[in-house]
Length: 405
Image (cartoon, rainbow, N blue to C red; front, top):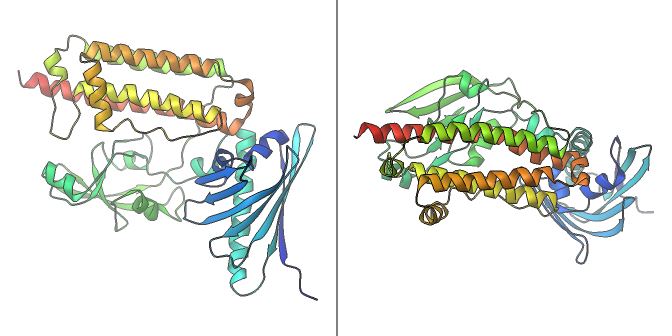
């Protein structure tokens, strides 16, 4: 008699409704929130499933059982699997908790299957632990337990950019800022420093940054080589963990918090722009840098895109939201609103729209701790740093413009 293919079984007790757990296994956004970097799932007609992890691993399959809030079953084939296997998820809700049982059956044994089984087990163990934490607390382990350099992602330098800016380097990452009380800031790094290498790895794109911190944990030390001014410098810094923000418990509380952050940033912006002449707002510090009007346009577009992204998360059809640096968009907005006060007015409109949207978030969405926390943290964490960074940019632009007079 042929040996029955082996199974792996996992159980978790999750303090969340079965409906929330079911959603996590039946939609692309659901999988992305706790398991994968990318996911596509068509569970109404074609019933397909495609998953991709940050390390490049992929798995595909199709749903054949979808019993709402009770059970899910789908085929599974990893990129190196000799044949399909089968994943069955059973849910049982009682007293506000959901008992989850996941069985991954049909896996082979011996030979190449040993490594495949070990990998599958590791992905499900880590993923289900993360699912439990996200549905109970809202916080994604992949974000808040990941080692952090403490930098804001800026521009990657290419040979073409280096030539245009007359830089003596050919590659690197020009950081958009440093986060207080984290590794890069503690090592003395500053906004606009260009990271050349991390532990000897040339930094040319996001993949190279990921390679440099792969396998690291918070507290590990990294050697960094960076370009500042006209020379290359070196430093050591400690990888940090990301602090968890305080998440307002209700939609109205979130709206009030965001409104306060916007008001504070707008007051500073008005102070900086007081008495600024039009020609000063059009001063460009360097050929490849934004003038003050373009910075204002970027703030408008960033807030618009953020609102579009948040709306897409609420309605379960998440889309990207970072196109606010595309020059044609900045140019078009400045052509439509050519004076700085009109741009500031437009910025106020999108802020007001955002606050109204957040105040009206559906109660069902707020109860989905993972989704709600992602949206809330996006606003609570990003607004202070983003506005502070670009208001500082405007201050430098205007100081350079005034120095010419």
